[in-house]
Length: 339
Ligand code: DAH
Image (cartoon, rainbow, N blue to C red; front, side, top):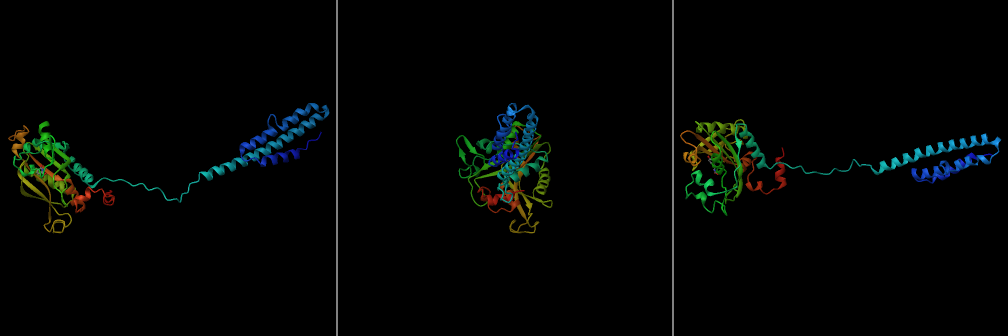
């Protein structure tokens, strides 16, 4: 019996052409080459064939199987390639599409200046100490030698809360630290302070940086030397300081410290209001009474203290003319301070 091999192959080809994917193609393949497939059925017919025709018949079936296997192998390769192309097309990324915008945050100018101040003074051996924002009259005023009738205690200047007050100055930290730690002391105390005050250069909440040094033989000269180093690091290598006599209850003598104007180099401009100097902080030699109040012997030890407004330093450094800009949180303003 002669097998119409080519017809069967053609028929398989036709059946395979309607298979949509490699799974369907496999089903078709099984109809021919599977255990219940047509080729296997042909082999089973062997027993009905006369003995002498069997080898020839077997050869034909084998040849047919090989043809079909070759056919399906190439169809499978094609189907896989088509499927891969489809998958890749689905995963295609349009590299010309505009990217997503992520707004990058930045430190607030007050934080930048605070960190810079800590850096500078830490380099001189100062340690950071943070006192509480809710204080009482003793730490904020009395221990700092502020008389009972001092105007700073007025309701108009100080926010009183139940059981205390919102500290008006980080100087309160001097007392808290000296009660805990014996000299030598080199303290830096940054923090929020509160005052009933509100205009273009004053805000009811602002930040101060307090400094305190107590040891044997500390004088006003040590303060001046340290301030010179500080303004050089903060403003410019050519910055100079000038001390003017002033008054604070907790220091004696007390000074107001000016720095040479970094905008005009001391010639006089709008920033320094034509004087060539800008006031940056208050300072002085720690009043004996303050040391006594903290159990430190003023005949053995002496010290100097200073306090500055961080917003003020930031405004001077960056040329900011209104303190409100620092609390309005307008991103257009804040994003100018990215480093
Ligand atoms: N506490 C003062 C203020 O708020 C600033 C100050 C002046 C602090 C002189 C000091 C100092 O430690 O010695 O205006």
